[in-house]
Image (cartoon, rainbow over all chains, first blue to last red; front, side, top):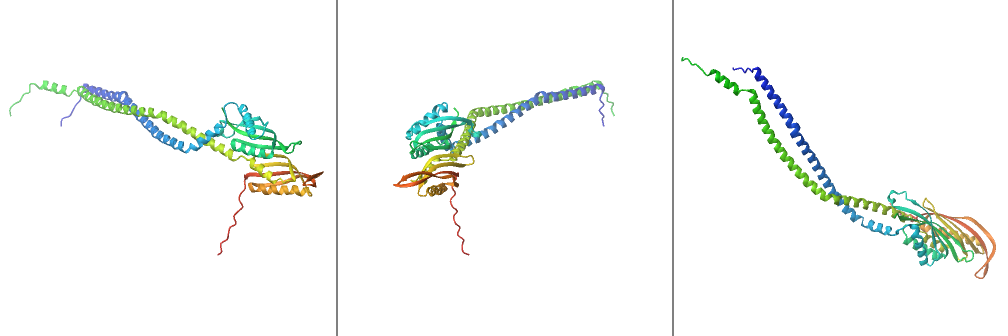
Length: 189
Length: 213
């Protein structure tokens, strides 16, 4: 059998070739293939992310469409309740509204005075304020008062009478002097 | 056997050594590898470009959908807020105490020989109502007339409210005499304290028939 004997020069050349090989592999993977793979992986991750978002967005849009159908009653009811709060400061429009209301109920000289206002504790009512009023009716007969109070409770769903005081007039016991403490929920404008 | 002389021995050896030059072979191998790597890089680059175009397509689709999704999310939050606010407001509306029916019942209880001079009613925090009623009763037995009013109040209010209590705070005879229906009647002043739960009265329990065994 023939033996290969490498000379010193050949060994040096072989070493040089091996170094060249290592450098080539390093440069290829580090400066060419590596960044390309990184970029590809980033793009694939972005595609997966966006596709996930698109899939969930379709669900989201379907849910919103269903919610829109389910909430039609609540939306119209909310709009009706919202319409009870007029534009501007409540002290500007609520007392005249009460005066007109009681005048339509045959009770004259009604007056409403603001006693205070406060925010609601419920987080869902963050856009609403509670206003406390003192409504005074200097003269009314009992049956007219009863009808007026019932009408007020029916036409003003957000108004709640918390205290009622009725005193017979000393000079004319047929008529009474009435004061109502009422609280209303009014939308912040 | 003929003698064979190779006079080109040195030249042939030199040529063989040139052919087996490790540097030359190494460079050839490196070149070959380099070509393979270039092809591989180009293939990978082509694939990456394909992915980039797919990404651009997906991003363009998302850009079209995103405003709609954002609007849908905003609307969804708005609707949820409307639903919960309406629920709370409806709860408040339903939990109100309606004074109209109460005043009507009160007026039904007052007979001709009684007169109410003062009514003070307050809705308490624990869904209870407290009413203070002052008035005058006339009759041969004015105290009995006042008691009749108290009994009537218990009966009438008990039909609509729970836990009705009507108690005398004060009941005193007056010296004043009034004429009612042509007859002179004595008078009494009374003060009643009324309390009840503002919730609707529960219907009386239905008697359960025991089955015969």
